[in-house]
Image (tube, rainbow, N blue to C red; front, side, top):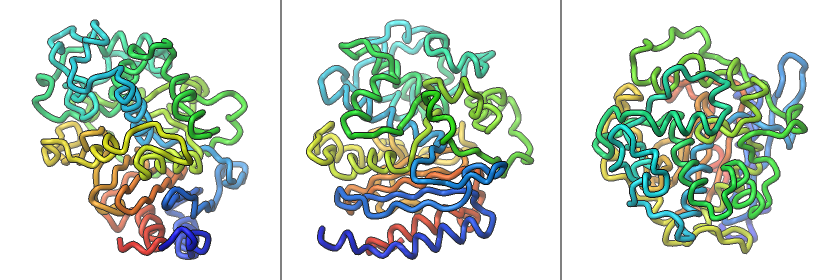
Amino acid sequence: MTANDLAEVNVEGVRAAMAAAVESGAETGLHVVAYHRGRKIIDLWEGVADPATGRKVEADTLFNVYSVTKAVTATALHIQAERGHVDYDAPIATYWPEFAAGGKEGATVRHALTHRVGVPQMPEGVTPEMMCDWNAMTTAIAALPPLAPPGEKTLYQSMTFGWIVGEIVRRTDPEGRDFRQFILDEICASLGLADLWLGIPDAAEPRVAIMSDRNAGDPPPPLATLFSQSMPPQVALVPPVFERPDVRRACIPGVGGIFNARDEARFWALLAEGGALDGVRLLSEERVAGFSNVRDNGDEPDPVMFGIPIPISTGGYWLGGHRVSSPRAIWHPGAGGSIGWADPDNRLAVAICHNRMFNTRTVEDDPILPISHAVMAAVGLEA
């Protein structure tokens, strides 16, 4: 496919897959956006943003994306490394001395990116109110003892990832900005993104899609599991917590993103294009190419995620797999099914946002997957 063909991409397969997901009841509302070779080629929305009122999904609807947020947070750290403010192999305590507490003096920035710091657990007694207090969270996380020596094993930092990586960025920013402002200035303003929020303004509230929780009736995991310690029930990734007004307005950099699919896809397009988009370069081609390298223990079972291996790349993104268009594609899922990815080999970037939260048990149970495959087919790729 040449650049001249982009305007003629057949999106009907994507439209049909989206309609089928909504009509079957597997999804409530969807927005799918894709860039190919630096140009937006798919921008489709379907369904209802608020079932109680009948409000439809529109082009400017905002969605909770949960852990897709981690990709933006990781990219902020890479921007600091690009500028020489951060060394990946330096101890975190070089920039954040308090983090050395409890035996974490050997934990490096790279360990933080690749979920090997050893502190997947949230602070004891964490509450939604505490999550909204950046200083309270970073102070408490810095004081945590590691559950394994830093660098020894993968312990997925379900929520702590954001504050650890975000605080490194904040501490190394010569302008001393808070992390939310860093994202607004260095990523959003640079790429012309109006709706990539880590803490929404009041004016955005009416545009946020209302979530439903398809798995609400499932029995909760035992409190003693590492999974529950990493996401305690009182701050679980569920609508009653993340639709609170204070939580929506807080900068929760691991799981709190509220994005519009257009801006999320444009963010991924920066990475699919090797760190530059529309004449704006934020990262070098060499650095972005390195993100598609697998972490050295990428097949190691993760005890936090019930022994399931998580394919983390050296850049802190997920890498490859059946949901994306290339083994070297970097991506991130979000709790409930959101997904975004950047495929550097095929120069494809995709954001799929939705509001019916579900945790799939099988490939056949995943209504997002046919939509992903339809996007790939639209640009001539096999799933």
